[in-house]
Amino acid sequence: MAFYFVQFLTGLASAASLFLVASGLSIIFGVTRIVNFAHGAFYMLGAYIAFTLTEQFSGAIGFWGGIVFAALIVAALGVLVEMVLLRRIYHAPELFQLLATFGLTLMVEDLVVLIWGPSDLLGRRAPGFWGAVDFFGQNVPTYDLFLIVLGPLVLGILWLLFQRTRWGVLVRAATQDRDMVAALGVNQKWLFTSVFAVGVFLAALGGALQIPRDAVHHAMDLRIIVDVFVVIVIGGLGSIIGAFVAAVLVSELNAFGILVFPKISIILVFLVMAAVLIIRPWGLFGKQEAPARRTPGLTVNPWRPLMLNERLGAMAALVLAAALPLIGGNYALAVGSEIAIFVIFAASLHFMMSVGGLASFGHAAYFGLGAYGVAFLAKMAGLPMIVSLLLGPLLGLLGAGVFGFFSVQLSGVYFAMLTLAFAQIVWSVAFQWVAVTGGDNGILGVWPEQWAASPSHFYWLSIGAAALAVVALRITVFSPFGFALRATRDSPLRGEAIGIDGKRIQWTAFVIAGTVAGVAGALFAYLKGSIFPDSLGISLSVDALVMVLLGGVETVSGVVVGAIVYKMLSIWLVSQTDLSKLVLGGFIVLIVVVLPKGIAGILETIGNRRRPEAPALLASQIDTAE
Image 1 (cartoon, rainbow, N blue to C red):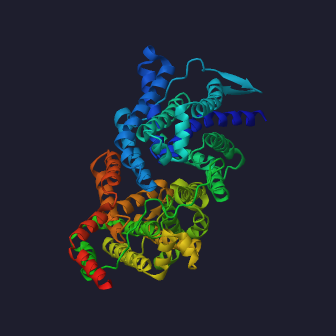
Image 2: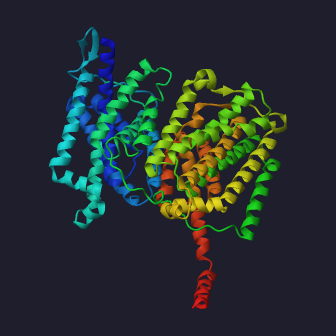
Image 3: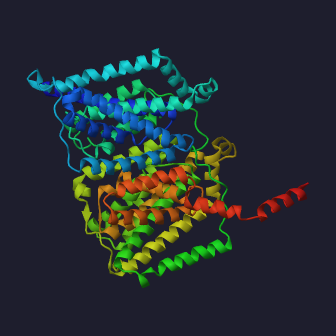
């Protein structure tokens, strides 16, 4: 019994740091409506800078001074980021904001390695908290007890700040109605900046306070940000009390999960998150908002079928791509095959995002399920390659069918977070179910048969599958089903009034996208000859999102351009520099700020401007009508 009590206290200590980071993100989202993926990066910077200050300047400012100064320095950096970057995208779609902050995270990861090196750093113990207290024969570090007291203390300070100060009143008012606050003459820019500074300060303080407990390393950001997203979604976006309660809940689940439910400990918090979103989509302490008419910002212009010259151009490009084996070596063919596979993957997500208005943050789940489906059939069942390719993606279809049923009940950021939760559940199962999936060792030896074994043959198979997938999705876009899906995206109430079952239509689109992603995963397994849990990870889902936005979410075929450019760039960067994340992150930020319509979107806009006959035609039609 004493052991479980001490485990409970350990969970409370972990909850303190988690609450600091989660409350900062919740405050930022409540006012600015930005889901800040870079919040984990600020947490990591707080830890690194605190390590430097406490090691190099402890004589001048002391340990606790180093902790506070580190949080203040990172808060100042946060203000700079808000003024230079975020002010430009406050009115951009939530998806674009998330990607911009993700790009910033990639940049910070390489910068900390460049400044502090790749090795883990061990911080010194906190003065005055070196020992332990005996609880029923079990030792509890005094620093853990300090953190247990600190959590409620910070909660009380935040409550006083938001309830008893004029600034807090303005922040709460901005959370409810930003337009009204602006109408009262409040300078929104500086209000947003101050809120962002407070949120970043809390994140950095949470990171700085971790140096006596954990090693400082360059993967801290992604490790903490997933838990933070879980906390704010369970507690309710914008709720400080919800963040505190959810932080305690998540930390205790992590502390006891390995003891009580060892086989599902990794997925336990995501199961709870999924359950909360399904039962109470706005979180335990969040407030229900009116449903958005469409996914914010995904306003897609009316599409038109390809003109004859455009069809000829697409066919010519396909013929040129098919001729690559005549001039390229084996490496070029392998890269070409991978690009073709990711064209399929990105096109499947683009179909769901643009036509359906459903921005998924966990689309890699169905890519990975398709890959595992092929591996199971080829390695364990010994089925021929062609049969495995046909049946393997059905595992992606099954996953999309189950997860999509629950996901389409939500919208906006809650839909995105539920898809992320399901993806993490699938990843956790693949990582932990070693007897079936091989765990982190993966499944090896998934090689193509002789008819597709040569690089040229597999390349032709990949681009043929990519062409069929893109054409099939495009045909679906202009089919009656596609028009019904777009009607549901643009005006659910009007669609329902004319007899369209919006949820069924969206679920069908989700299943179609998941199945096509499964096809890409099946080909990927044969290309690499193996499959690992990384194929289900968050980073792969974000890669697909970047491809879609780079190509242009407002075009039907622009995703092909986005997938080719992004994949070629990422492969080239990895081979050319050790700072590939820094360059790639900067590229993602540049996309969001400079090219919000993507490459194909910009080209289409330029093309439309060069068509002088369009206004004349419209005028003649008006004259005729009159």
